[in-house]
Length: 390
Image (cartoon, rainbow, N blue to C red; front, side, top):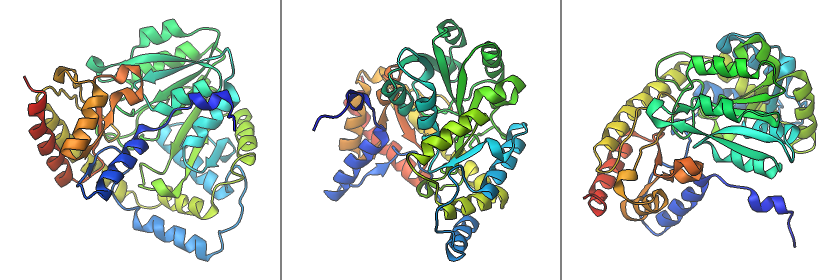
């Protein structure tokens, strides 16, 4: 059969492709250390699991409202209001199965042929993939390694045109762990003030910050509240990747569009997972604090170790759980290097080019793995480095 042309341009997450390769090697008896997937290795906190189990026993096994259960939307609204310093009500919240549908629905609703969308590069690959799928033009803004992996704001400003319909922000950022400085957020908010443009603010890593507190959201500026879609979810903060629970906070007009798209695709989000989500947001946060403290310990260890490998240079990420070393000095293209590290050292990592053209010459390592495994992975890569060290 013949598929529509747009399917040929759809990208994929290289993390899942590398995971499949790593699993195939494991099936052959090889020992693989997984540093490719962005998934916390901690169990879902006990009180959240118990809330989900109770919800199943209490009959939360049927369809729910397409926008999300009222009590779950109210809990999310309280949480977002408290953490972002803004006032939002449950009428602005849409609950979806995983955070990614918010990204998908926003681009379907806002982008078409002739439109332009600005996004950071290197960045989460689905941004560019979905922009292209909608027939819009992706406008990449390179991240600046020397400035802590933040946006080149002068370039961003120069790329804003009457065709710009969407700007995608991600802070803390995947794959670099960079955080957009507050002064850059304010500058962008002022640039958007009198423009017909929407900001998709991907805040999925907002709780995984090593300086404490939350990353500033552009939605905190009053004129940006109706121009911003906050994308967040439970996968990273509460180690709930398999629960498929995310949400968006947006204008009432975009809520209506999202509900339409949900009704035409997923009908609703599983009700028992929404009850577990309420327990996550309103229950004890000790497990979150523990996870972030552990991630910080691992971050320090992996960055120190990567900087000790010939040809590697790695800056200290401020958030998320990824290290993004510069490996240009090895003289080996990043895709070839990542494949060599997988096949010969038994360490699964990602080629930076999978995150966009400006990711060439970098690798991404997820440190959502035990300190013991991280140290062993570093030992294996360092031993392999004789292959490229001068």
